[in-house]
Amino acid sequence: MRTKPAILAFFALATIAMQGLLTSCAGDENLGTEKQEGLQTLKINLNTVTRAAAYSDPGTTAENTINRVTIGIFDQTTGDVKTIQDAPNAAAPEIITSQLVADDDILVAVNAPAGTFTGVLTKLAFEKSTLGIDDALPVSGTGTVDPAKLPMFGDGKIALKSGSSTIYEATVPVYHMVAKVTLKSLGVDFDATGAYKDAKFTPTEVFMYSVPDKLDFYPASSSTSYVYNYLTTKTPTYYNGEAGDASVKAYLGTGTPHGFSPAHATISGVNGSSAYSWGTVGTKILYLYTMPNNSTKPTQLVIKGTFDSNGDGTDDPGFVYYPVNINYNSANGSAAEGATPKQVYPNKNYIVDVTIKGKGASSPSASLDPQTATATVTVQSFVDASQTNVFN
Image 1 (cartoon, rainbow, N blue to C red):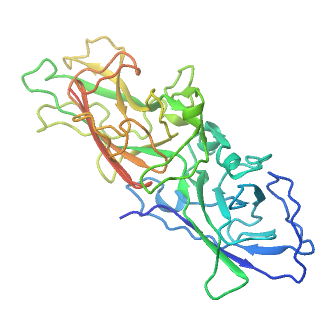
Image 2 (tube, one colour):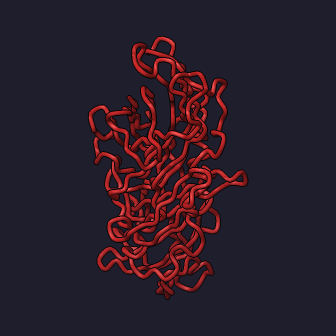
Image 3 (cartoon, rainbow, N blue to C red):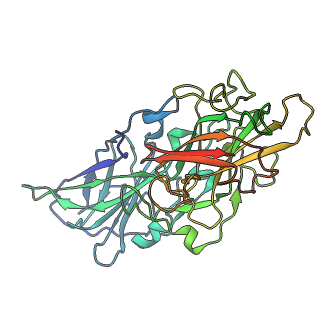
């Protein structure tokens, strides 16, 4: 059983004889890093509660890496900022602050770029700060998303430690702000008496389609859902991962050819008996990261390739597309995790199994479910959410 990553923050206050007030230039993420008379030292120990690695993907160590920690403390009544600081050492954070009060609010952002919270005056303004897609899905030197730089966020309350008059503590679970999509298997299952009994499908590319350009820091409402404000108040720009598309973000797709070159690229077979599965559990797993999406324009995982209807190589060489809605089981129209179908939630790994039984669409924007595809999805907190899609 995988558990959501969490930060456990323990606040140790060193009492100083004179109590001074921290003069706050709101939104300065390095505010109060120099010791001043009357200030207190806030020491934070960060521990991540991680999950087991899935298949051959980056898994626990990379995806739960903490490179940078920004801490905001806010008045419990007014929501006004007391301090926002970047911990100088993310591995053993320590900041300087004053006048902490039990039940004050604490917000913790992990791996947010410098300057993200500049000008923030209130807790709500912190939560409404946004990350653009390039910051939310930071790339590595290879041009793919770097799993060790994924942003995380959480909120909590400061409490006086039992039996102490000088030490405060808080437990702040942090959630990944983006989602993950894993193509666990891709196979064909043509009807032995149908028009496509001899058909062959050759996948050439796998990519995300209709991915919003921004997200905000609004906190998780429960372990299975996430309230995100940005898409309810703004009209986003959408990006795709198809090579050559005008709105392409290369890290949203595998490029051409498809990313990991399985041993048998061309898939053929009938009635399940001889159908070749492109991916197999434990090997050849393909994964991509994507943004949360609660808009009416759902995000999809699109499988692109060539389709030879009679298997003799004489068909039109044009591409076909199989768009798979995320968090949607096409067989019955249900959400994989019991939440709203076709909405992509942060901190979820949507694991997709796809079976092709017919010819794909002429464009990635065409919908093929339920007539041409079924998907089964399962979801967990960067734990698995599986879905199965069948394209008839």
